Length: 283
Image (cartoon, rainbow, N blue to C red):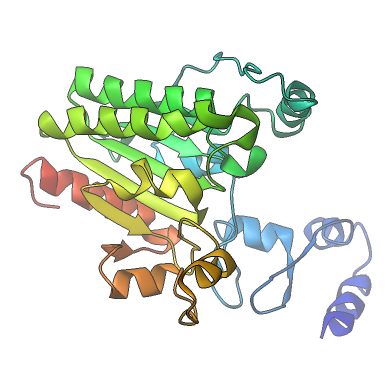
């Protein structure tokens, strides 16, 4: 199949169709679900969703914000917060520096205030390209401050989660972020403010064990891996064979852990309808 596609593309001469010739160099991507070979541009234009099987690929926080927040309305907060090395973990700050250069972001979450179809929200979007979205002290602090911004300004809160869990390079300090973010969400709840948690692939570890699963409404993207520990660890601990796909969003919705599964193309409109209903309006 891929050979036929390559032959078809190479028959197009450069200059006669610029868009097609652009796709000749470094613009292929293989879907890890259906194994289809796709043009990166086609996937990009389809919100980073496989055009063949609907697999939702992982995306950056920057792209996520551009898809969800009204153009020109996003104001980033706490952008200059710096990661430190509390445990003097060898090579940690060098890895941070390399990732900052590669991803053009300073940490594994972007936070800010923006509008969704005109409704103002406080939002935090985790980025799996930066240390697999692991939660260190800066990630926990930025999310906590965003929750506090929502409380101060009486805004609904949305957090897009993607994470491998707590960041081992910061040890117990990273684990403390679980309690800190959960405590802040408790204050948000007492104020009667809405919190929508959106789980994307993967959402695991300490993030799942804290703010990810504390939403008033919990949404997941299709086929997202969601859990605390990995299947092998769980099987070894409980001594039982686990059901097929038990950590996928569809299984979790069936068993009551997830309220909605929403495709990426429908995410903004779904969030808007929920926000509108929470305001007492008709979506």
